[in-house]
Length: 112
Length: 118
Image 1 (cartoon, rainbow over the protein chains, first blue to last red):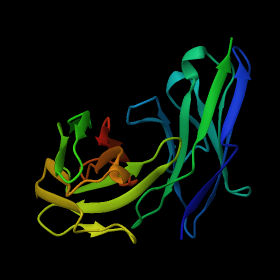
Image 2 (image 1 turned 120 degrees about the horizontal axis):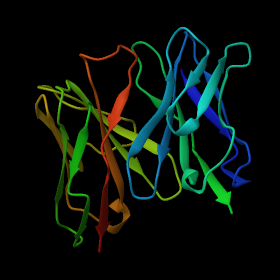
Image 3 (image 1 turned 45 degrees about the horizontal axis):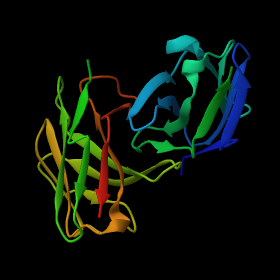
């Protein structure tokens, strides 16, 4: 069965600092991987996704993630945090024939 | 494209009443929609998968008689919380899969509905 583990329920960075949100997955077949962002009282917005091809995926708002099969990881990064990046971030995995499964989420706080 | 709406965005009701939440795919036809529940500071918990024209598939532990799901058309799924109680208070989010889009199981999410049961 597929699953996702997000390391760190809460990450705090200073404005301008590197953002690194960790995600490890478990899947019996090549997975499809997603990162979503959720602002308070809102639904989920897709940041980026990995399906096939290039393992470094670029998304919206300056975020990117790298699929590393050997490490079963799909960590999310952004070189320079903005105050507007403060939100909840969810990593998700799916594979053909299965529905999407979400990690527990990581709350990102950005300090001025 | 691939926009999903939910109505209402928030609702307050008295204990014992029923509440209906609508989920619509605005620019595509969704044969499959999903209903999630999210408690404060927690992840999304899949409640059920709704397939157009057939009965919903509920996740283990979700009461199908309490959370009635209807997917009567390719653009509309409804979740009715029957005889609501305060413990049903939560944030409910729907999503839809676009069969005409990619085959990567991507889901498009609605903005969510905040239900408060007094």
